[in-house]
Length: 152
Image 1: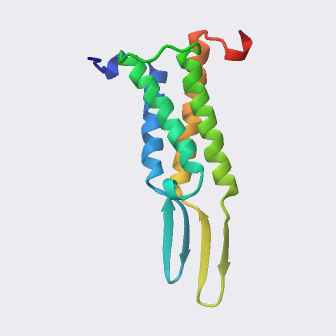
Image 2: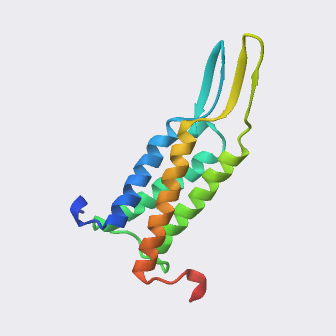
Image 3: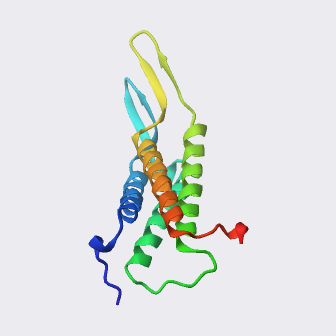
């Protein structure tokens, strides 16, 4: 049985794990919404189109690293773990960023009423967590000395 010890994780491992947890929480927050003087509505990361896939890749990268560091028997691959975490983080970040960039946005203010629609707090939190995870995944990759699969 694998035993998880938070204290055995490096600083980069901890930041990657925390970013993955924040990414998971952000998936349940509003990513897109509409508000007017008469009410508002929003959808979470799971309901905002393909962006949830990027969020889940960020979570998966963190989960893989934590499972690996806790001593769980992970399948052997020809690709190093730092490359896997960096790849999942980078692809997840690109997907979340593309979703944010492609969300429709706009507003109107009229006499006594108005409305606005666009990105909400959840997608911003997910994007920041994903970027932080990519930065620390890259640091982990550089420290590991692993090579990219295509440079072998």
